[in-house]
Image (cartoon, rainbow, N blue to C red; front, side):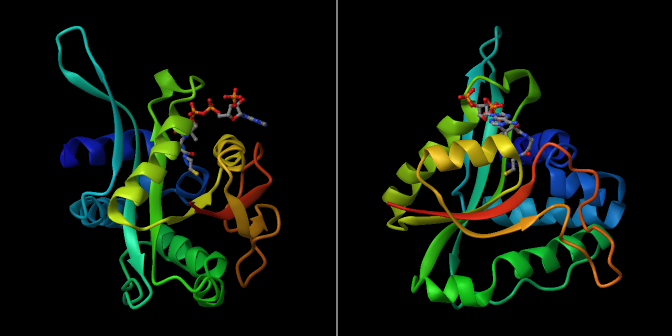
Length: 201
Ligand SMILES: CC(C)(COP(=O)(O)OP(=O)(O)OC[C@H]1O[C@@H](n2cnc3c(N)ncnc32)[C@H](O)[C@@H]1OP(=O)(O)O)[C@@H](O)C(=O)NCCC(=O)NCCS
């Protein structure tokens, strides 16, 4: 299932999710390979959620997924990894999810998300919200009762607000720039903010 999930995320998440799309992960070999490597590492924790349906031949098909790991305060920072897009994404992650914000929550551990995605042919049916909701069961089972996720598209933000997530930090796409004054994530028109959000239950 891990290989199939990586294939699914590469096929539907990386080309569609705005941060990965606007930095061109899918078209840059180093970043694509790094992303695949990261997905492998993430899946090794066996904490990811997958929605399946049964095809006419009885075979299970992936409809959607959300990848999670447990983050602990004493985890080492992520190492530098190859890829221009990856470098932008890592810097962004440290900008939005600062040590101050995470440390200020006084939590030793939380669940952190590595990507929520629904197969395009099943979008618009509420599958994403069901997967997001299942995160609470996952957290409850392993005794980690806070989830922190970066929500990058309007529809996932709508779902998160509905499920009771609150905003820890946010940037406007049109204001988040690099040192040269260029937009880091250009071309995102349908969503105004990138939101770091938290749910405790
Ligand atoms: C994000 C994603 C998982 C959501 O898929 P989904 O579960 O099919 O979600 P929907 O399209 O049904 O949208 C969820 C809700 O947002 C609402 N919504 C969509 N666009 C909206 C907009 N512009 N303004 C307000 N609400 C909006 C929908 O109406 C829906 O609410 P409803 O159930 O009351 O109708 C899917 O679009 C996806 O895989 N995208 C590519 C990867 C990605 O960007 N992942 C998100 C990273 S945070």
